[in-house]
Amino acid sequence: MEDLVIRDADVADGSGAPSYRADVVVDGGRIVAVVKEAAAAGCQRPRATRELDAEGLVLSPGFIDMHAHSDLALLRDPDHSAKAAQGVTLEVLGQDGLSYAPVDDRTLAEVRRAIAGWNGPGDDVDFDWRSVGGYLDRLDRGVAVNAAYLIPQGTVRALAVGWEDRAATPAELDRMRRLVAEGMEQGAVGMSSGLTYTPGMYAGDAELTELCRVVASYGGYYCPHHRSYGAGALEAYEEMVALSREAGCSLHLAHATMNFGVNRGRAPELLSLLDRALADGADITLDTYPYTPGCTTLAAMLPSWANEGGPDAVLARLADDETSERIRHHLESIGSDGCHGVPIEWDTIEISGVADPALADLVGRTLEESARLRGETPWTTARRLLLADRLAPSILQHVGHEENVRAIMRHRVHTGGSDGILRGSKPHPRAYGTFPHYLGHYVRELGVLSLEECVAHLTGRPAARLRLPDRGLVREGYRADLVLFDPETVAAGSTFEEPRRLPTGIPYVLIDGRFVMEDGRRTGELAGRSVRRAPRRP
Image 1 (cartoon, rainbow, N blue to C red):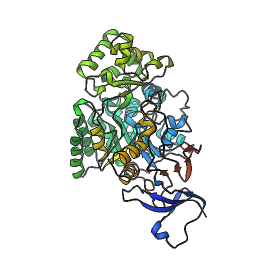
Image 2: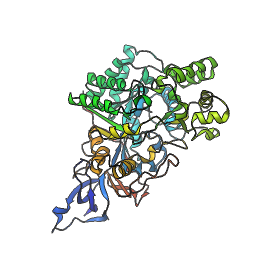
Image 3: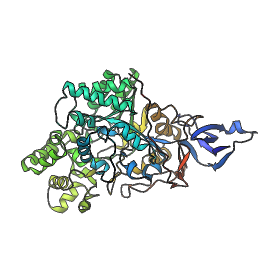
Image 4: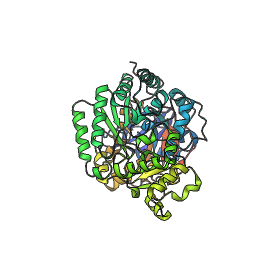
């Protein structure tokens, strides 16, 4: 007798095809039978050790978060309800060109400080790895949900070149190629870049093309946070399309938005660019989150020249009055490349998290509001905060446009990604609500996507991008990573006012056939492991 039969479910199988009613049988962590209602008429129905009545619920593959920042959260928080309660069964880590492998002792210390605003300082994590394979082995000890990993190009550059704004030498480029090849051989699914973050932004297109050629030779994909989401956004997208095609590498555009006032209503231009490339044979996908504000660190807003040399050099420049004034001028008058070439608008920058509890009174306020309360300029407040919190503050940036969000999510190569930063006392609600927000708000309430289409965007399509042969669909032989949700009540509980509230309408989540959510509660199962794509050898 099998382990489990899920009885009378409405199956949205991840392909985008119309849903159907069926019994789904699970055994040994895999789907062993899908018995459609019509086929079961007059026949003995499948039996199992446990039967789950799914009347009124939709059964779908587990959701795949194509852009996650849970690199340390998975290790420090066994519960991880932020993602498990959403129905996420697989996260893709190593995003935006900065993460914790491959590193040496020096680089690890630098990276920990550089992205403390994303993941915290990591003082509660035992960094007992240095390689990509070592990090994936750490995940294999048991975590809440599955995870795949992208080799972070900025970390690779920090390891081989440092944090200086200069071209790599031939020897350094060779080392970077080797590091990328080793990461792919150890199980990475591709490579990410953060081309508005140091030190990844210092790489020219020729350098990136060479690394992408290595990724392509192993069957991976390139996932860039490209050089601008503001002024010059379309040119930045064009650059990535051309670069990936020159390298022969599949392309997945990270959090593919069109933000700031200069891009209001311009999503159709982006989609036309992608359609032309797709018609010409390019292999392109993208991910987005279903919200208008962005989220990053306050230090990321600084111009690239101010970030050169790593965290200590940044703090020294901020402490120097003359250099600080140059930074302010770039931010407010010229348009910092860290702020996507657009002069900063302090009333759009909301502090969402700080490391030092003594600074907590700034959280939830814009920098303009905090400065007004203190009787000082916004830059004075921002500078003081960056120095006092040692570059750790995270921010919400209210610069998106709803019409762009809706247009992009309809595209046939779109997938879902939360870009969720889990730290801070007031994080972006997308960290806790992205997937139910798609299903509740954009499917049920607005009808932007049909339910079956939306499920395909969140399951089958990302699994295809990751080239996972047994995930992303409800099919016999596939892994039993499954979600049961109520289409009438599924909704994000998280809001900008209460960002850590869990969703409603998702009572059951299974990973490898084991319940990680049951009756809407976390079970304590640590069913997640690393998901390593077997590389295609060059």
